[in-house]
Image 1 (tube, helix red, strand yellow):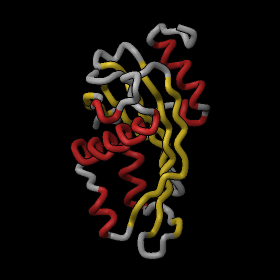
Image 2 (cartoon, helix red, strand yellow):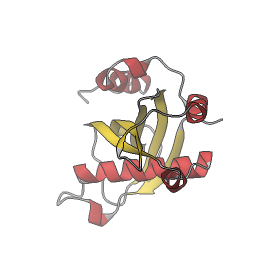
Image 3 (cartoon, helix red, strand yellow):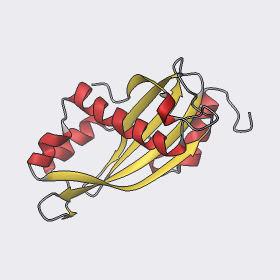
Image 4 (cartoon, helix red, strand yellow):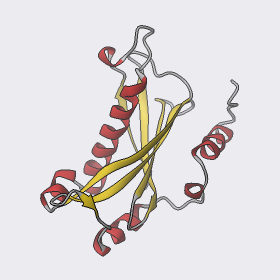
Length: 164
């Protein structure tokens, strides 16, 4: 099963600032929309089905680092992967790259907290969900590090300096 999912997107004019760069707030939308599409298209996981069953997730935190601007009309590749799954949360890594995947535009880690839709309170993931989550969790050691350490590793793999 593919654990690192990706899709191509075009940066839209209405999402850009006066300089033709993707607005910082819009990165969140691009990332979250891509992740939802990835879940549906690759794992047949429809979030509305979970919601109807009383299970949902809220964002506990976003940690995003902007590295290079995404520009108007540019084709970008968004990658997403589950890097840590526990009963209390899911940690998802999202990367935005150029279409050729040679330049990193941004990296975001999002922590999703499971909630009971009926009560609005935090809930643990079920055993059956944890079995699924563990089957798509990316095997790595960086989830216990920091996002900065992860970015240095990604840039090193591409032989790109943070100062470039």
